[in-house]
Length: 423
Image (cartoon, rainbow, N blue to C red; front, side):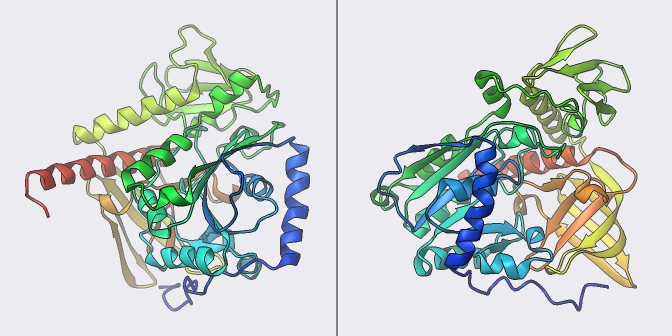
């Protein structure tokens, strides 16, 4: 197999403390970016808080990193960055103190890296626990282990909840729009509290601080977006028609979103509100449509009707040098989890991910503008980018199914523990 003898990314090398001259460079890049977007940072309970502490950040768009840099000024941070962020720039990212992570893996090494950043570097450690850009401007699922991690580190915890970043560049259409930005920087756990609060209370505070709905924020703050292609690409997340219930036949162009099956057509206004131009508007609020799709997938799983199967082009990312095309494999996803098989250069390949190994899945739309939609699966030493070859506009549903299967299996396990079947 093409990548089996390639060097793997060194996840063990300790995160560095950012040198002063690179800090100046980071500021020189970040501040013009956020000044041009009139960023306003609202600080709550932050007086007197100095590093080291954990900073948990919402994740919306690439501009998040500039917003974070400005919000924590004049302090520096070690940032956790996904493996694909290191491609062709590993030296620079290591120099500025970035910590590498493969998404949705249980990584003990990462815990040690966070400890090093806090205890040795005496830094802020910035974590984006949603692990991907928000799909429709609402909070993604957070791991249950987050509270446990914070408890283990014994330092204060702050949350940076950003607003406007998603609206300026949604993941389903990366063309930039003119939107002013805000961010709420809040210390949610003090040094004294981290020693006494239990994990459940920590998770409760984190989840509450992470609540956001960018379309409600846009409407309430009257942030007008006149971008003429503002709905283009929206069919990638709103892939199911709520009128005829047909899946994967939605399309979009300009300000309109429509179903190719029943021809129901919606228009997005300048405040992100949808209206059916043909008659009955079932969903005017984009996140409501999105959650309707999630519930549909959940019902399919509960009835035993959910299954995805297709041939997929498989790219491997063993290190920061870039992607290695392995060939065409076959992917199955159902209530048993993911199963990827293939024969690459004469070597049989098998990757299985059980439901409880992934509480969510990372997906990309039209990845890098040339590869198409994909879902990626990671092990501790490789990440596989999988591009469906025959089925279109399916990765959003796969991500819903991953999350709902995880929750169902997790709840079943909890129930069995309660009655003594599982230790």
